[in-house]
Length: 133
Image (cartoon, rainbow, N blue to C red; front, side, top):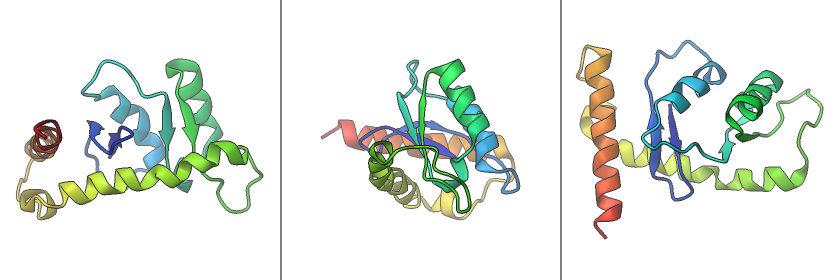
């Protein structure tokens, strides 16, 4: 799981098994930030539409959660906030950049700590490429 800024550059990355839902991994990923300051807004897909997560992020971390409503659920956000959802392609671009590293696509590392180190190294390379320009 990753968190990116407005330009698609990585702010935080973590790894986890495929079984837990993304809603349970958000706070763990926010704790693994590269920078000291937290993002103001967190844009997620329909899996992030949770009243409990929204309340925790707003109360404890002062982060606004923007996620479209799941089907069959009433509206919880107005359209003005959801207009920012169209910027979600920037996180998808970060994952596309990470897919350029063969060691991340085919997980050669057996241990999770080694794989996390490779993911973080890939983020360092991405950040280095962006700031070298």
